[in-house]
Image (cartoon, rainbow, N blue to C red; front, side):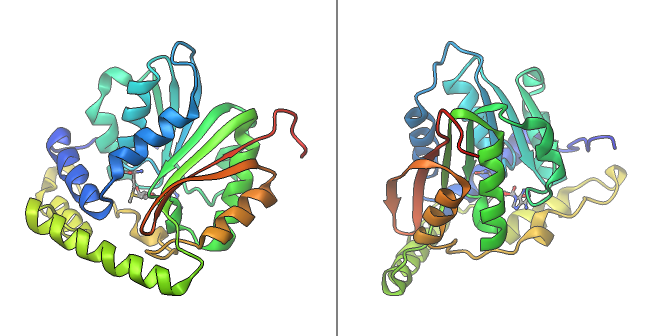
Length: 259
Ligand SMILES: C[S@@+](CC[C@H](N)C(=O)[O-])C[C@H]1O[C@@H](n2cnc3c(N)ncnc32)[C@H](O)[C@@H]1O
């Protein structure tokens, strides 16, 4: 199947995407950099990175900036965001392989057995319900080389409902202020504006990823994440940072794999 070509100004729409995402995730870029620097990979080495739920490549571009010799496999199910990503950096085709796939589908993972030094993800895995999240954690373990690291920044709910409710209220207040201050699109507003701008001659805009959504805005609880990572075989599972309902977690595959 031929990849979709993005028929609009990719840079302009990427900026709208970034503005929208930054309103929803107040410390988004800080989270990206925290993950990438914590990984501590050698920037002079041609490391292999997998970005799960890459969207338009925001975290992938940042990874390539910090690890200039890296190669990234960037996976998402949304053809429109992938087309935007490809259009943004035609110069980067030898450094990024974009893959259109559903993370829940086991088949595309198979060729990547122990292929990656690092697996990263931002604001994506909360789209999965707990059973699929557990399955995906198992697959991440399989595609990491022994000694490799997984870093995830996402909505991770508190185990304590009282605190989670408070986090949600405070976050909603921060988000509303950010939208007021910037005039950025909401999620629905972004997709409606993009569909309205999509040129007739490009054919109908393919459906976004909404049909894969099965998660919750809060994400699974911290203990669900930690237990699923441990069950997958990871060790040194560490919560590095939390701001309200957002967190950055890492987990390492033992150098000598036990599975
Ligand atoms: C909020 S966006 C974040 C995108 C990007 N990581 C960023 O920070 O800008 C969540 C992304 O996860 C992708 N996603 C959600 N569920 C998925 C699944 N089951 N398979 C593949 N991609 C998925 C969506 O298509 C969407 O692009």
